Image 1 (tube, rainbow, N blue to C red):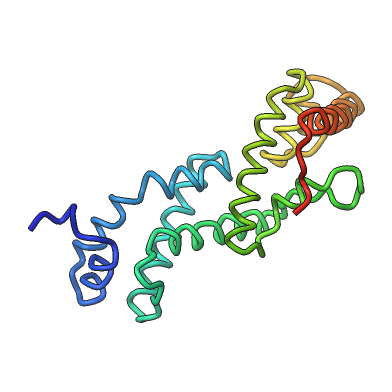
Image 2: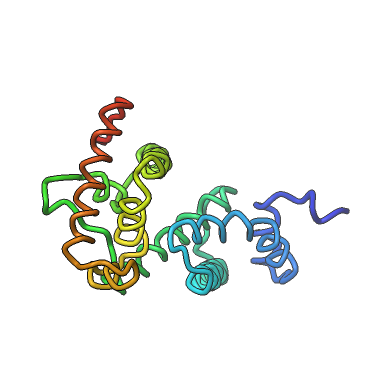
Amino acid sequence: MNKVLIDDATLVSNYIKGDENSLAILIARHKQRIYSFVYSKVYDRDVAEDIFQDTFIKVINTLKKGRYNEEGKFLPWVMRIAHNLVIDHFRRNNRMPKFDNSGEFSIFSILSDDSLNAEKRIIKDQVETDVRKLVDELPEDQKEVLLMRIYKDMSFKEIAERTDVSINTALGRMRYALINLRKVIEKHNIVLTN
């Protein structure tokens, strides 16, 4: 019997019964999708690799303790574990993007909300994709500062040093990036509230 054709639920069941090879097949089958998801959040290959490894350590521990009861929905379950580990990574480094205190722009607080149900998560992912496309429409200098600040979570001092400008210029570019992003959002008539 060809192992590639065995569904995830059967492989999970076989692994729980002691077939180590079944786990290897599951990891091989889903590695690209899970790793890509993690990398799309952290933008760092080493961190993504660590989180990917931690995800499967957690998967193995849960399966070995007999706590797995996802009714055959193995990949969504693993993705949820990976997603939670990504959030833990940002929390550990105090790097959750927080913009809600400004009252200026709430999209980034929506993006960092991890207590979303499945439907809202799909919407959030779509909003994140839409925002990425909108960010691409910004002037290069504004886009650069925005990406460094939001997605790489660099301080304005680090951004100023990296882009060889003053902190005030970096702050100004960020401010204009947010203003322009709002204009683009209004122009495209995109609703960002959840």
